[in-house]
Every structure is written in C-alpha cells, then in structure tokens.
Image (cartoon, rainbow, N blue to C red; front, side, top):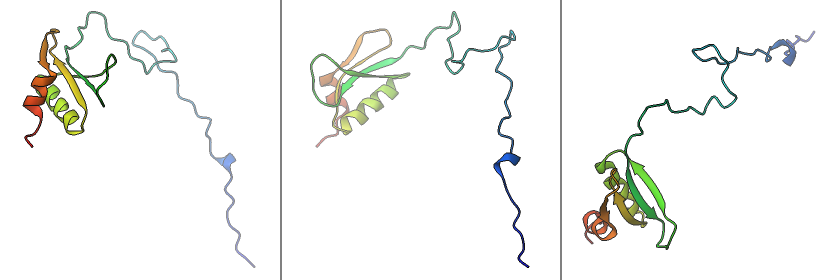
Amino acid sequence: MAAQKPKWTKSTGKFGTQLPPLTTIEGKVSTPNWHRIKMAEGVEQATQWLITWDTKRRDGVFNTAQDATRGAALERAKKFLQMGFVVYSIVDPLGNGTMTEEAITAQLMPAV
C-alpha cells in the first residue's frame, strides 16, 4: 500500500485579505496618488548648486544636475569630466555664474 501525499490546494490560502485604506491625521481617506507627497505650505526649498553638462558638445539643449553643496557639485563635475562628458558651468544657489567651462576644466581635469 502506497503512502498518500497530502493535497495542497490554492483554495486553502486566503489571498483576499485587504487592509483598511490609508488615512490622514484628519481621518480622511488619502487619494489614489498617496505616494505623491505634497510640500507643506511655507516650507522653503533648499538652494542647490546647478551643474550644466552633456555627453557631447551640443548647442541649445543641456542636461542639469543639482547638489546641495559646492564640494558635492565640484565632485560631480569631476566625475562627469572623467567619463568624457562636457561640463559647461557650475552655478551657485544665488544664480551667479560661479565657474565657466574653462575654469572647470583647468581646476578639475587631471594633469596628463
């Protein structure tokens, strides 16, 4: 006599368990786009250093990257240059043109 194997069926597991909807502090149900967090009113945006760069030299359209500090912006620009990208400028949070392409290349490119 052969031993019988236990039968496992999908019907034994209960996959229909649902959690209650997410609520806010006021008790209202959140929107379907709950993952999109809105900024609180009155909160100031942190100022960012802006790096203008591109993978090759082009006129008109550029890529931009933002960093919180001058050191982080210079480090990112250095990595872009090491990858062979073109770094056009680094602008400080107040909007002044801090470094031009020539200054960036002279300061950050390794001596060959």
